[in-house]
Image (cartoon, rainbow, N blue to C red):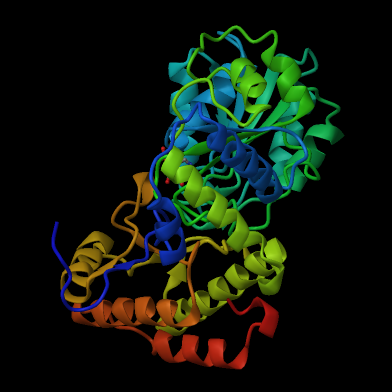
Length: 404
Ligand code: PLP
């Protein structure tokens, strides 16, 4: 790998996000015996800490796997072959989860707005309500939605989905992917009545990739007792049992758990406003970045005012401009990584991450790289997004206790 002799690389993709030094140091401790006495303490500490991050009193399962594994685990533990599942298309990640469910032999129904319309908004909860009301026989066993669609930059209203299921008086489970939302965008597993929340380490939690989560509800645990999809590695039963003492049924990702303990302390630190402070900081960064996009005269991929993501912003490049060529130029000239357009929007947009470990100046640097690169690529910008973002950040200071 290249050594960067001229300052640090700017990793501004929407995950993996930069890992703070404090977490890197925590992870550098020696790997310990995962069946020894010290490990149990670490296990109990992280299992308790992560509950606070999901805002749940119920168990959270930790897998040594990427988010995709936790997607599979959520389905495999709650459903049986041939079960009907209602999934909502918000973008590329919703589509990948739908593909995964199909491969597990579930009968998926993928609803959403036509074309790329649905890729510019959050979940339209009324469509879920209408579909569930029509399912009078209650054949649909689960509703699956993505909280923060990382491919577009739209965050869905999960409470509205909960209310839609309740309004239809439907018993389906609610499974939510908050792989990129958790710990940067507001999320309340218990209060929002979610049955399984899926998340990963490499986004808002500021950790490297490698661990992922299922946060459970009592109803999900009950469903797991009669679920018939084959599972062993992903099975919750042994995991929940052994987790009671802080241990795991197989070798856990010890050093990432050191990092997780540190990440929980950082995110929950009352000196910086705790979780509410964290969410408020990301909302403000999203606003600053959108001020830049507006000043450039460009569109954001998300066009629904209530759904703009505090995690990332998708920037649509003008007609005829290949967004990936612009990204490549920015990477090569300014050592700045931006997210690529995925699936239906490949080449049409790039993504700026403002999740995890961020501050005003990191974002100013990222926006400067974008602006210089777009100009070099021949894009006629309406004005300076960098100037607009500077004005926004200078003019909207975060409350003192939320600044870090
Ligand atoms: N879901 C969402 C919303 C994501 O952003 C990602 C990864 O970016 C995934 C699922 C897949 O997770 P992983 O790549 O960790 O397997």
